Length: 44
Image (tube, rainbow, N blue to C red; front, side):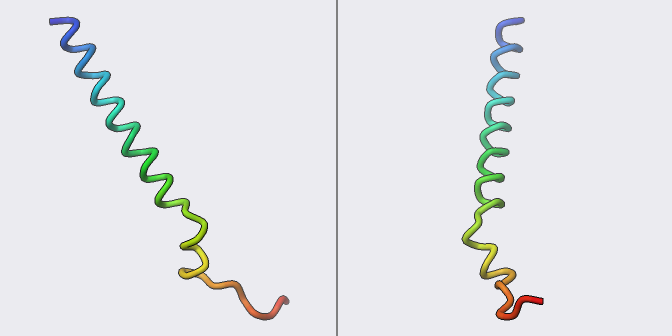
């Protein structure tokens, strides 16, 4: 019973970590920042 609980918790933790890393990779994509907020043509 104890081994099952530890293994199950570890699997849930790894899946959560995988989703978090994927979210950071997609959310912090530097190429998409130019389309959302283009660089201004003039510098102030």
